[in-house]
Amino acid sequence: MPLHPAQRLLHQAAFLKSAQIVEQCPPDEGLEVAFAGRSNAGKSSAINRLTGQRSLARTSKTPGRTQLLNFFTLDEQRRLVDLPGYGYAKVDKAVRMQWQEHLDDYLARRECLTGLVLLMDIRHPLREFDQLMLEWSARSGMPLLILLTKADKLKFGAAKSALMQVTKTLKDHPAPLRVQLFSATSGQGCEQAWDQLAEWLRIEDDTPPVI
Image (tube, rainbow, N blue to C red; front, side):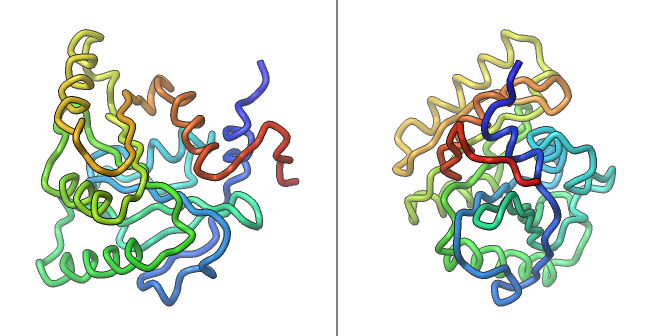
């Protein structure tokens, strides 16, 4: 079975650089999609699953270790960005506030950002950090793909019910958004996610793989 066009390109993902502030980011050109989520939402696992790489994004049993903006190159004009995770990070309030300022700065100033993937643990959706990201998306009009992660942890009926509830809650959100189930363990939802990433990154069927 042929690979999805986005899957084929994402398989070429490679670490580019880390940045603490916007001035340290790669040049603001091309197309960029960012991944955001609470520290325990399974963000790194989702990135690794979507790119077909086991350790592209760091995973840890200690949530909150990602404190920088981590950039991954797909080709000369396309990138993924792993944004800092929040929630269970055991750092003092001043450090957390600094992280938030840098994240806000990136989201407000990055012209090449075309879409935001917001990951929520399906068992604990729409927490405070999620609401902050939704509010920012509403203000900026930034398209959102919401992945309800760890869907394999729930039975089919319970997962569908959670999906319907989150979709209903966000039906009047002013920015374009999609909500779907996702499991990094089983691969559930990967095809839908690749479809959205292909749209945001303008990946066509004939987009050549990077050799």
